[in-house]
Image (cartoon, rainbow, N blue to C red; front, side):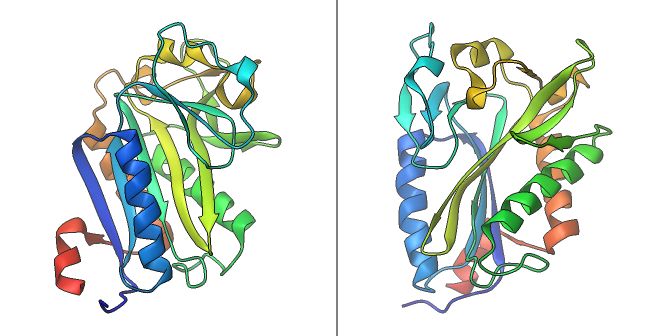
Length: 231
């Protein structure tokens, strides 16, 4: 058994990962966190185009004219699209002793802090993000339509007080692919991306903002290369 480490590992993939492989990895990893065998982890990655169903997903909200693969995610929420140009951040934390200022065993506070992280991240790219009562996720005013649109989604699962799944931030995705679902069951509003605010934005820009936002709220992390040093 390895020594448990309170530090949080920050892993940022440069290539796309398989969604089934990601689910398998998270399931095994959060079990190891629960056993105090491995550090907590934030895993940034991308996936090929696909749709995932949360525990509240409705079959009529899946349109899928592109015939993309669909998966039962096992997280909370409804239908979500993942694809190239969208940054996934899988958050695997021990909520019995989470990073300050997050209180222990408080799922509502955990969701609110994830939203705060996203809003802070957007602020570093000169975008004003906000939440709306009854609408999960983080929203902004789309610069093209001048209407409210979702720029980031949340969907989490808690297993024995260890979190997995997490957030998705639209950086440069093909927004037409969101038309294959009713995102999170909300028909009245569209989706947007960082690219619509800044056509020169890159995934690296978003990753740097996500890391800065996380550090400002929760404190420093360790690079994924440090994992071999603490195990």
